[in-house]
Image (tube, rainbow, N blue to C red):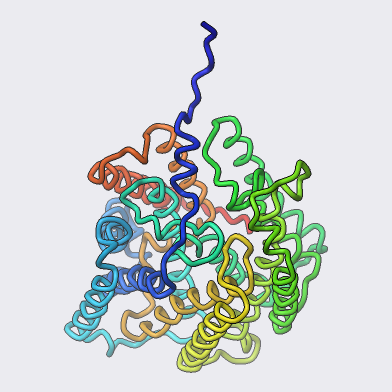
Length: 452
């Protein structure tokens, strides 16, 4: 008999089906999941008495502080996303009461809190890390049966926890971008574009090569046959560099792009993008990734102006008070939620696959909600930065790369869809511990990676 080479991923098609044709969950449930993680972060802040500089004096004290961060934040998040998924609303209410109780006992509301850029920077860092924690945990957890299917990415229309991933990553890069902070580059636009996109393109081609060589499962309906997350980030970076507009007007351009793209979708493009038919040309094979760039580019531009409006508008003259920033972000959050509900009902339902207008407003609303929660709690918890928080914030994209590598190793070593619930939890705990340990060592060593 002829002998055939054994595939590194014999259950590839079964795994692809496992994450396909899913309807998602409600917007309310996704909000509750995000609020749980944010509340866990705030609870940990109420118990944190050390500053990062104090904890970093020795590796022993640093690891001890990180261990507490893990127990208070990462481990409960993992459990809420898996074995406690049916009690997500009860968990949120319980965490809220715990936060109120412990802050009242400690009377930390009487502590002075910082005004100005340092306070805003701490809030933005927490928001970025919450987003990254969720992303890193979900990209592996979704391959196990213990992870609810309604939290996995939707096939066509709908909302889920994982649908927020790429949109949130694009938006949080806009919030801290050079454009939002009005920092001018000394390089020409093409040099700036080359510097920011080359690493992302290399990562994109590296991921493509690895998935093909290892016969790794790829959900084609997500980005297309050859497209991936890194190509989307690179595309947004290139478009932003070519057409660089001031932060105070970027939202106007972004809105025009989004409305124009939505009109195109409504007039027939959505049928083409959601169909399973593909030609042999590059555009047809990667239609989801290529056309959704218009949506992500518009989202990025809107995010730049929102960030500028909230944090950096008066940077050259005077610092806006924290109270005014809180009012602004709450009003913006309400506005984007109203827009999301109206567009989802009367224009077109939310679709991550196409990155349509409803998806963009939903991502902005969800992210502003998390950021608003952190800002509103600043005078309760103060502006301390957690050790684990700093480790991820300083190497955000690097942490995502490490998480992807570990996810790939687990999937090639274990038949995740056949694993028992207990074994799945143990694997996910080991994975999250390893990820945190790697990022902590990188941070403690003083290494900082920034690609975009």
